[in-house]
Each structure stands twice: as structure tokens, then as C-alpha cells.
Image (cartoon, rainbow, N blue to C red; front, side, top):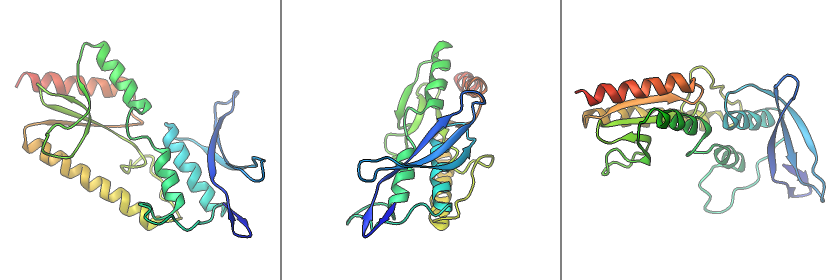
Length: 211
């Protein structure tokens, strides 16, 4: 945030769950002279914490509450806002992944976590079943362009559009390369019901095992 007189503050998005309604509200919080002011951003309604945090950052930009601080020399991101949203999204051991893994483990399935189906290909699946050759990807709604939950940002729109379209193209290429190598690919959206997702994975593993 631009505090004026050349001063910038690092802001963060805070999520609060209302105890009575279970609705989730997003707030922008920052530090200024030992104090921690907060500004209400709006209600968020996504299924995961990561998606709600990303939505909170979008709301903060749309309300004009954030300003671009010149990025550090050599930074890999185009702006502090880009870095903040990227860091808010975990790439491993997300809640949907952990729930899916738990359900599959209870059904007696054993798998490898965060591994490459093809060692020579730098593509990592969230779960792999090596013998039946099944690769499972749990895709985040924000990063992979979920048709149900993705909301385009009005700020840095071109960056986010290019980023998400690039991820989708990479996903398609990964699926093609794995299938050409004899693998079965299962993609699960993070918003999917864990039980239904687990059933799809089990069906794929059982079907591949009988081939």
C-alpha cells in the first residue's frame, strides 16, 4: 500500500468466518507506525481458502486500495500484487489433495505423492499409481481456469489471462504426452466433492489394472 511520502506498507488479506451464517468476509490489513488498520473488502464464496484469498486481493485492487511498489531488481514477478497472490496459493498438500489422499488410503490404495510419471518429463502429478500407470492432478480453480469459479480480474487482466491460458495449454500437453506413453490421466477440480473424486480415481485405477 502507498502510505504517502514515498512510504509503502506490506498488506495482507485476512479471512473471517461469521459464526452464525458461516459466511466469509475478506479484509485488507497492513502495518503503519505500530498499528494494524484493516479495511473491509467484501464477502467471498469460493470453496477453498486459496481461492478466497485470491478473490480478496482482486477486490482490494478493484477498490483502489493497493498501489504498485517498484519491484526489486531481479524479481521474477511483474509486481508485488502478483507475488502476493501467487504466494497465497499453495502448490502442494492443499486441503483437497489431503482429503482425496485420505479417502484413497482408507480404500487400501497406495500411491506416490508429488512425483513425475515420466522421469524424463518435468511434469509432476499430485498422485501417481505406478503399476497401473494412473496419474492424478488436483487442479486449483484459480490457476487452471475453472469454468465454474474463475472470475477475471479487472487489474492486470492481461497478465492473469496469459498466465491461466498458459497453464491450461501446459495441462493439455501434459495429458497428451502421458496418454501417448500409456498413462491414464485423471484431473480433479479442487471444488469437486472428495467422495466423487475418489470414486473416479478408484475406477481409473481398477480399469487400468485389468488392461
